[in-house]
Length: 271
View 1 (cartoon, rainbow, N blue to C red):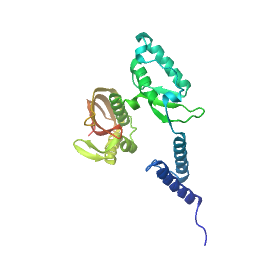
View 2 (cartoon, rainbow, N blue to C red):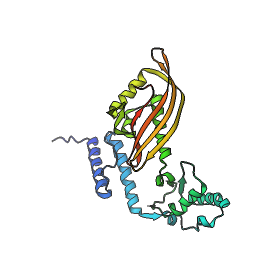
View 3 (tube, rainbow, N blue to C red):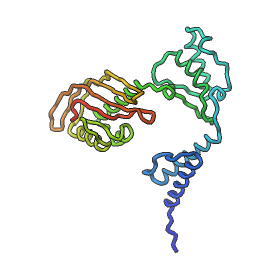
View 4 (cartoon, rainbow, N blue to C red):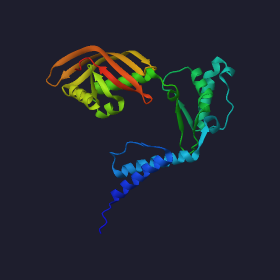
């Protein structure tokens, strides 16, 4: 009987085996959404994930302080206030030479940064992987989320995608809740995208005159956030008409899976 197994069939079988090994050996039920990728690309990605997980498992974990060979570290109460910045610079440089990088997305005092590193980060455990050219990166906000910053960033990204015609259905899929409230009604991601696409299609271009966030609030007990922005822009219609729009944007968020997702909104001129 003729063998009808193709190289692609063999790749698909290998991919299924890799998924099974990731589940059994590393407890990864959903390693990544690769179902839409070509079999060869999916194979490369699954092999990368499997090899990385194997390296991590074999390496074991180590505290940051032990990884950098336990250098003498001054406590914050041992440093004069006018010397904290210098000590912070020395500490960051020392960590960097040991392949540890520490980033702060938002602005904080040098005292807060120094206390975070010496009293929290140095005791953090991570995989003891040492490779030439590899640097382990830690970000302050991963330990202490800045909800004000995150809500502002998500709001700016959403508004810019709408007014700069950069919206895609992936935006709804990854940045919104499963259902989103618009004008008092609930829509799924596809429905919301269609509303935005229609809005963008009838306008040749938008000229933003003002787009400023004025209010940001959040309640982590309720897992809810709210952002208000003032907007002023000009719509240049496809038929040659021009309309100036002024008003407030209202954006509602919920905190889920460790991040913020847009759950409802209203924009002046839309709808």
